[in-house]
Image 1 (cartoon, helix red, strand yellow):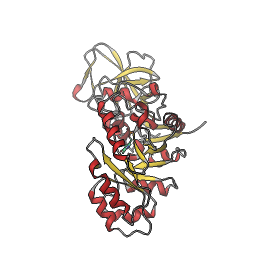
Image 2 (cartoon, rainbow, N blue to C red):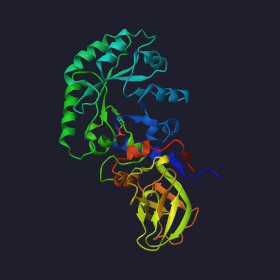
Image 3 (cartoon, rainbow, N blue to C red):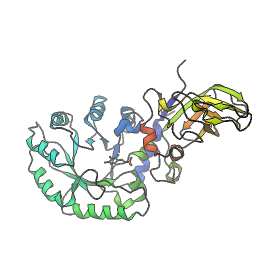
Length: 361
Ligand SMILES: *Cc1c(COP(=O)(O)O)cnc(C)c1O
């Protein structure tokens, strides 16, 4: 028998979430962000399940190659552009689009001799101060790219928001203003909105929107969950009980004797642990569902197993299903408990886990 720990991917939920993006940004084209193995959901599986996306955004050439090899013909944007000049020929051959955010990439393009020009997005730093040219450089960069034979006409402009997940953040207002002002004189398609902006800042939805997290059915807004935005969680992390034991008051559980039974109680052992990507350091007290009933993890997760409090579930037995996160126990809640964000938990699910796809039934 195979190990019970597994990740279930609900493909119809991806489509539901994409249609939510369409409703919220009806005039925008949608670039589905599938970097980092589609936030841990599986790159090719996810892109294949989203035929309605107008384009895909990835972090690197390797990810784009996987998509092309899987037969995805939609436009694909390399969100950080080329990392070296050596990538440009492949980029052109695969008809990929690139972000240009740094002087070094202008040089690469200037020196390249490509059979056909590539589609470029200029990334402008509107205040996040991660990637992008200072706004005052936009005109110069635009001219330089316009005169570059390796760059296709129809250059586009993009930027990224640092605090879009905070309703009413003055910084977001300022970034939107700066971006719009900077773009004003260029006849170019624009994009600035990520998931949080699509959900909270309708004015930010321009020619293109770039949803990531919300496509996976998760809220990027602290204190709000997918339910508040009518999003459907795509990933669930499941396992089952592989042991139960009756312990006595004062008995300890796990490495470091990290839990002391406050009374006589039943404890269950679940086949899932930090070796699967479950956060170890803050697992104690974390909510978990056993047969759909809510209880908590006790002690620290170990590599392949963790322990749960079965006091509320006296009939629990080996083989009972466990949800670590999913459509009933939301990943937002687990992440908050673990002192992290859903992005990190999803990207961290280990590839050793069995992945199951659930399609339309
Ligand atoms: C990751 C990423 C996104 C998507 O962000 P979400 O918060 O997941 O919606 C959009 N744009 C860029 C440039 C990104 O790197």
